[in-house]
Structures are given as structure tokens and as C-alpha cells.
Length: 100
Image 1 (cartoon, rainbow, N blue to C red):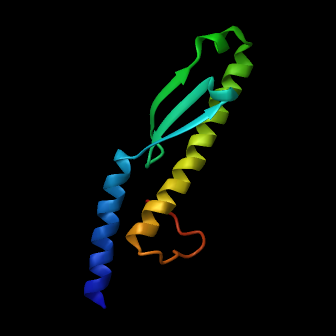
Image 2 (image 1 turned 135 degrees about the vertical axis):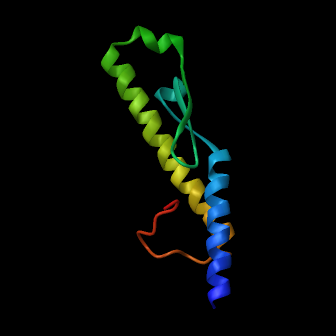
């Protein structure tokens, strides 16, 4: 049993490391603002259509926030998929957060 726990811990560490290499996009404003995050919710890039910069600053700011939130939601979904592969479909307890 202990060896299985150690094996799972090792796999979790490997999975956590591999999350750095996942890129997930979120967007808002019909694609006028796009944000790319890695699996650790670190922003990799942001793309803002120059046309949107003609809008009021508060609108542009709201679009950036919305795109970031969309990307974060997409990352959470992708991380769940990756963890499901790792755990063989075994569902982790509700509220269990990964990476730790």
C-alpha cells in the first residue's frame, strides 16, 4: 500500500511539472482579447486586437479581465482532464485542488 502511495506521489509530481507545458487560451469580446495561461495559471501571452484599443479604457480592462477568467476556467477543466488520465478515471474528492 505504501509503495502505491509513493508511486502516486511520484506521478503527481511529474504531472505538476508537465502542467507548465500546457497552454490554454481564453478570450472575450468575440476574440478581440485573448489570454494564454499555462497549467499553473501563469500568463504566457496576451493578444489585444488594435481595433479594441479605440474603446474606452474601462471596456478594454473589462475585456482583459473576462479573457483571463475564461482562460482560468479552461485551465481548470484541462487540469481535471489531465488528472483523470493520471488517476485512471478515479475521481478526486470534492474540493481537492491540484496542483497543491
